[in-house]
Length: 281
Length: 281
Image (cartoon, rainbow over all chains, first blue to last red; front, side):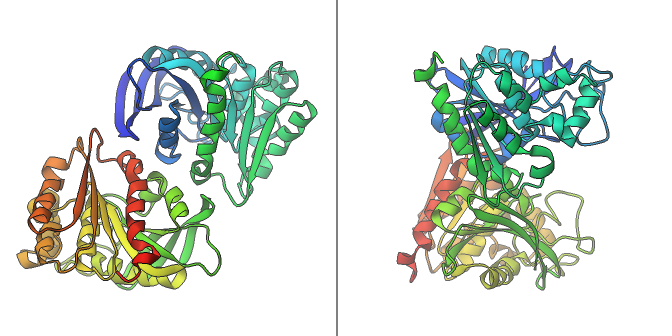
């Protein structure tokens, strides 16, 4: 693991590391913000999953999250959104291939060799983080757009691993919208049962645990009607009595200006579940 | 004037406008953050000047200033760092020509036709802002690196226009450092008296007013020893009994991570002088 960038930020450290991923079979960058801490101190970890076209940089340069991570003593980790490199399969479109991993394990050629982002995020990356940073083993997950989808799916499928889930403008029902149908067809083929394992709206009815969910969605988001469809998640959560809070934010769009405006609330939300009094949740 | 981008941000609006500058004889972009406000309300304006290679985007995407502007009710304006366009003179180097205007009025060919950033910032842009946004006519100025130099020079030379001055990692003595010598030679020729009009360390002894100055400087900033030399400003301010506060920030570098960490303090500093009880300063 190699540190390729490091900056003092709110008296902690914002760094970017590169490591060789066994799961993805390529070099991967991830960013880590470590708050100021005493040498024996251990902190929970909050994983951020970014959206289409993003890499490990977008969140750390634009969201303004470091201030709140420092205040609340939580490590922030933001991985890249797909495997990368010249030997990794790709597509000319922005919504398939590199930069568009959709946080799933691909089963179809040519994608299946490298596109195993679900296993990378759930298993390999947390092991790296826990081995190298002052983590206390507690973790939660959040993300934006495609990364909001990733946070919901990964959080819902792993209730013992993640204490809470939140998302900004997530794709809640990829099986029903153009971005998701295109990606799932390419990465997963026609197996609808497999699709449903990566679709938050499909997963909610079979959840045995009830990991708390917070969602923020801008009302003037260009992708709301066609790709995001947050009401589908509202409906299924209501039917299933699943605890989910959706804040519709008047006048906000899909950008990091929206994320920055509410990132403090999301970090506060997660800290309720990541702090010590909930350690046996 | 055309709005080319607009986003809701902390319940106000972050926008980018393009207008035709008479002073610079080209189209110019500038960004404006307007906090949430009542219809009859008027607010002070804080001008941000960016550093080498930057345009109107860097500050608005990376500094995290909107939250504090919204809280304190101050309009933030961030112009581009030079005239732009195919007909505007340029140089292959990053530190001369487009993206490197140095906030001065050039006297030398080929630069003098367009490179009149001092007049643009002091006269033309504030007139545009006051005509189109809810400004109360009070203003202060701050900036980073080359923009810190610009804020110091413009603030010191116009004490009746700017209530306060601050800077992150400014070039304080451009006449004495490589960046400044190169730019001043190209833009201003050999006239040392003219150089001194754009050099904060040279200006301090002749200041009749004492506009308050705040500076933050990272201790591991790569440019500190060769280009920034903040101690030269400390020395002249001490000699001249000029009120200036310099915070040396242990472990911080030259990046926007440094700026974001202390932007709240800078906005608070300016608000002391921009608020109503100081309106007759």
